[in-house]
Structures are given as C-alpha cells and as structure tokens.
Image (cartoon, rainbow, N blue to C red):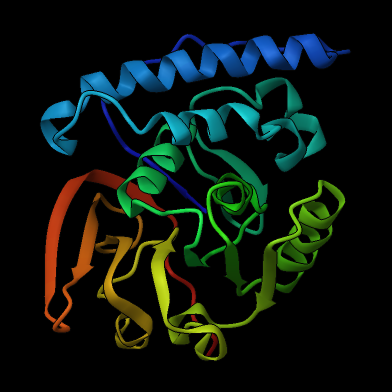
Length: 241
C-alpha cells in the first residue's frame, strides 16, 4: 500500500481505451524492462545490478490491470504508485519487485504481508511461496482484495481484516514478513513471529516524509540485524484506536 520516492524517470506505456490481451502483455514486457533499468540505477543502494529472474517472471505474470481501479486501467503499467481509495495506493512495481527479492523466499516459504491494499503484492508472492497470509486494516479494501484474489485463482492467499501490528499469531512463525506501510518502529509482535533465519522488509520513518526501506534479519540464535536499503515514501502504518 505504499509508494516510493526516488529519482527515477519512466516512459509510461499508455494503454488504449479498449485494451486487449496483447496490449496488456506488451505493457507488462515494457514494465519489466523499466524495472530492470531502475535496478541498475539504484544498484549503489541495493547492492545488486539485477533481481532474481524468478521475481521478474512473477512480476511479468500478474495482471496489474486487475488490481487498479477501473478508471485507472490505462495507467496500470506505469512504473509508479496509483491511488486505490481510502488514502491508500498500489505500490510502484519496481518497489514491489525489490521488496519481494529482498525476502529471498523459497517455494516452501510461509509469508506474512501487512497492508493488503488491492492484493497486488500478495499476488506476486503467491506464485513464489507455499502459503501467503495478508492483513488489511480497512475492511472494504480487505474484502475486495479477498474476492479479487479468489476470482483470479490465487488460492494460497488468506486475507484477514485487522490490525497488522499484532501479526497473525495462529500461522506463525513466518519465513518472511513484508510490511507495505511506513511504521515509526519495527512492531515487536512481528519480530517475535519471524522465524529464526527469517527476513522482514519494512519502511521505517515518519508519516508523509521520506523513510528508509529496511531489511531486518533474524539469525539462528534470535539476534536481529538491520540494514538500510534506500529512501522511500509510503503511506502511514494504520492502527486501530
């Protein structure tokens, strides 16, 4: 549910009003090229010049046009965040790919996402892991995402409506946790639910200002190591009052 703030400039692929399967396929292919270019531009931040090919394949297979509001389908393959209502956004594809790559998931991974939004990030991860769990605090968005993911065939994704700060204890521990909203600190319940040897990606910082995308790693003895990846700007981590 976030957006990235970076010095990246993209050539937007504007889809025709009556876009068909081939139009969307061409747009996805161009988007993949743009993501690859952004990775190269930010290699000094992220420490690599390319992402895992499996991640790029997943990005190229998810129909982003089905995860944006109907009136924004023409912009579905812009490499930028788009509004999805309730003050939330669908994240920039480059950031979706990067965060997914940083998790280093395997086909047997159990993953928790905080901030379902439209369900796009869950859809990308769905084809890469065994079990995907995602929590959305805004009921209308969460219910819509659940129906959307179901209709599109992402059967290994479970959606919960609730406060993501506390994680999803019933399904813990998780091999990886991804947070798609900016928090002022790393929620202790999420750290507790992260498996030994697991990874968490989370933006940390003040709301509505530049934050830092953090990679959090828990070693096999339970020790925690944090690494800043790059500056970003995400919507705030919402809590229930």
